[in-house]
Image 1 (tube, rainbow, N blue to C red):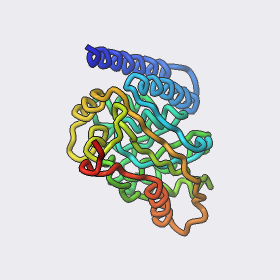
Image 2: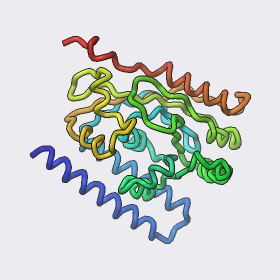
Image 3: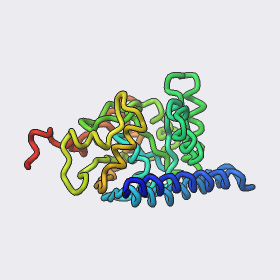
Length: 260
């Protein structure tokens, strides 16, 4: 019964979010103002979503400044809620996400910017979109791993979009996200996979696993900002950011090392 109530409330929250987002798109305001309203609504809804799912987040460090680029490792669909709940954020995602049923629609309504990493010719135009957002004071979030992982390590960072920070003279704020416990029990690698969305896993399977958890504890740590202009080229910048997040990330132990 509790699971049915959770699903029903989640459906209500999704529908309410869709209605609010569509309503904002009809307002006679500038595109910048419209996107700002969308990010604010997304923050409000994500905070309620975390409550509904029983997710408690330990936020450590200062929130990145407005008009700043943040980068973070990527493990789960919950990552979006955790980051957006902290402060209004514009996310950057792939064309593949845009094409996913429902998920793509919700992301688009929330103001997500979609990029096609396979088409290098489109990269300059996509960079200009993000530069425009930074110049208007938006917090922009990249997941430079370009996919979500099983949490065993931080994957290499792709650096193509990091040039926007160099162009605008912005600082880049690296964040390390980790999951600490499920149902008050410390995680091992096997239990962590209940939360992660990776490999060939279907999205509905991932959601069912998340919904089965009664309580989840996560931690989002803000690491020292990096000045993009101080790094020789973008690949070195990507490697520096990846090392920073990797050093802060501690994966759970294998299951056999967990104490009963």
